[in-house]
Length: 222
Ligand SMILES: NC(=O)c1ccc[n+]([C@@H]2O[C@H](COP(=O)([O-])OP(=O)(O)OC[C@H]3O[C@@H](n4cnc5c(N)ncnc54)[C@H](OP(=O)(O)O)[C@@H]3O)[C@@H](O)[C@H]2O)c1
Image (cartoon, rainbow, N blue to C red; front, side, top):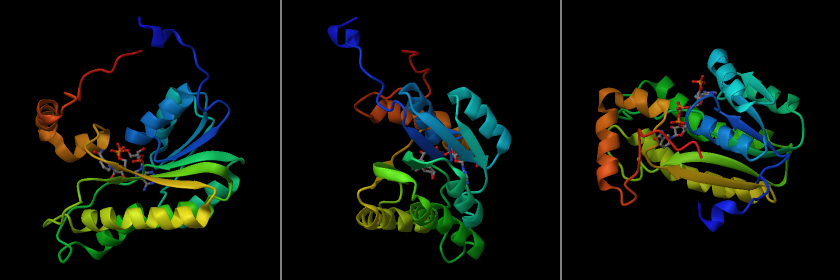
């Protein structure tokens, strides 16, 4: 044990409230787990009520709400009923939608824009209980930074999200609005998208990233 690990510190989010929209799996759940460890009260949402309850017990959630976050009415109700103040809201719902823009069903195009652009606007419009200096945190990605056949929507929202985030940050200040551009993250979503290719992708990243990343390895309990 080195000197640094002996230094005790206060939990970083003691007494704060963290809302995770899409918090029953993947990045949202992992963030909720970390927030709980740092002393935050966490509130989780997701669509599947059983998955949500399992996640809530795991992280000792203060409360949960099961609804489709792209549906404006339940989203508005959720923010109306949630106790104030909220310190941080993370939006981790959604999934990528692939296909040629000219061939995709219009409903799928609309769904993709709902999940990756309109949801963020709706959250911002409803986040009146977020305290000054609190945050809204959105997840974008790196996979659509270049155009490509089949990546039209992903690429479009990748380009639009920074502008959307910056404008919302100006409008909502002193509430902060931030965007994470995630690369590959090993989540249930990645497993369902990659299927049999998941292990190859993990290996490729282990072999090529300078950190020698440990995807698929159990994380240390400490
Ligand atoms: N994983 C990656 O490599 C990666 C990379 C870049 C960007 N992203 C983006 O980051 C976000 C999170 O990804 P993830 O890999 O953590 O996904 P995940 O493992 O599928 O987890 C997504 C979470 O959001 C919930 N959710 C999904 N759609 C929802 C909706 N319409 N309303 C309410 N809750 C919803 C899911 O629960 P229910 O299904 O029960 O609702 C689940 O709790 C997604 O927008 C994804 O596109 C992911």
